[in-house]
Length: 68
Image (cartoon, rainbow, N blue to C red; front, side):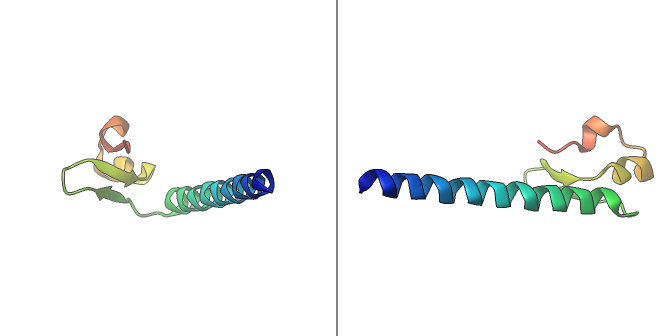
């Protein structure tokens, strides 16, 4: 019985991870499809999210606006 519960939890985790990846892919595709430049910066100055258009519009080097 414990093995079945572990298997079910593992399956649920895999489904949740797949759903998260799909959501991230949809967000990324949406960001890249917009004509607007988008740059999200944390309070400490780290780039959290950006699209290529922001670098094109403002002439930033791609590395400067890369999330990470």
